[in-house]
Image 1: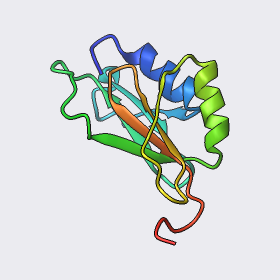
Image 2: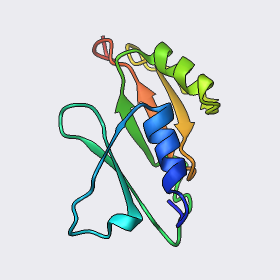
Image 3: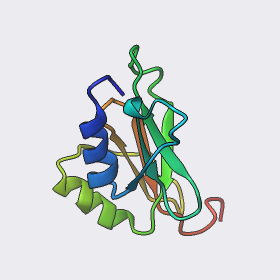
Length: 116
């Protein structure tokens, strides 16, 4: 994220995606970090200040599994987040969004094996 991206990270990951912010380790430069819990299994999303922030590749992305994709679609719409369509995958309804720093985020719901 850029130097001034902390509030935008909180609005997107905390507000639009509903993740809970967690304190980063005090041994790190906490003024340059915003961390979020991604579920209850120990996964986290770490946003950090990158002075050379920019898109590396349109294919690079983070994928988050959600329980109810349509509920997330509505939540994102309510937060004015633009939704990008995704190529369908059997038993994996999904959508793409961009965070405030132009990182690509995939949200998917796993309904079964994709090769069934």
